[in-house]
Length: 71
Image 1 (cartoon, rainbow, N blue to C red):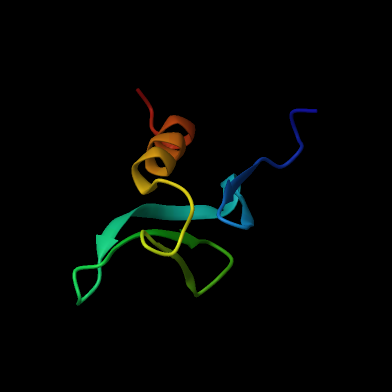
Image 2: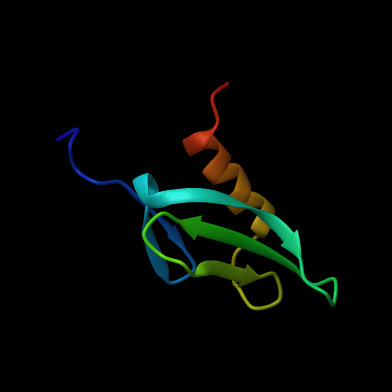
């Protein structure tokens, strides 16, 4: 069972955690805050704007930090 892929759900998408290259909080030119997630297999970056999603960006970053950061 250890060889099964693990996914994280962000909004309506499920992203393979092994495929995530980077993530974080950013601001666009209008100072709108968003969560970005870039993957190894896609040239596009997923962007989740704070005003457009039904989840809290800070909670999602904390969830991702728990998966990826070495403490």
